[in-house]
Amino acid sequence: MTPRNSAVVKPGDAGAAWRKPPLPDPPRKHDMRQYNHYHRAAIGNTIYRHFVRQPDVLVSGEGYLCIDRNQPQSRWRYPDLLIAYGVDPDDISENNGYEIAVVGKPPDLVLEVASPSTGRADYTTKRDDYAAFGVGEYWRFDYSGGRYHDAPLAGDRLVNGQYEPIDLADHRSGKMFGMVSGYSPVLDLYLCWDSGKLRFYDPKTDGFLMAPQELETALAEAQERIRQLEAELER
Image (cartoon, rainbow, N blue to C red; front, top):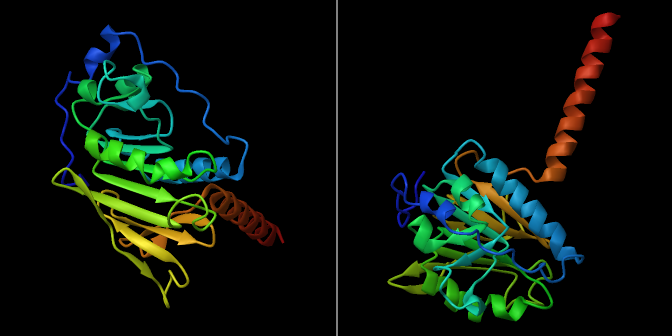
């Protein structure tokens, strides 16, 4: 699945990255020891597993995002989650960040997780910057329910160079009962605010993507069931 606004990068477009020194490491993320670090890791791992079999999809929460390295570094960003289709993740990793001029296209989606120190910037200055970068979708998740962002969950879609809000729905029934959700055409998934957690609902499978702890629980249950079956066979 390739989003409407993604462009396929021709072989060699990003390969020039090795000719320059890699981008510097971004500073340590603010509030890294706070609760939002748990959400960053859980969200990133869930989405990474969803795309793990697609080698031309980049799922990253590391490194700077900039138009090019000649742009003032004060305008560089380092998002919590970045997704890009039709790219070479290895080339971007070697460049130590996403340099749009080198990759040949902007990312398709950026997501920011709220924090006490950067929450306001997420829905003000960063929103303007990501629109200027050409990021197709920009999502914001606030596990606190809106204490740090302007809403528990918000998304924007780039239309003619400007962000337009993505409609959200409150669910009164069904699998998303009690959740607030919005559909992402880029991911072909629904992002759902669920009691302080961000979940991803896949309309193709009519189910939620499993978070790391859910996968561990399911694996443990499967292993226990195998042990029970083996014990029954030995009787």
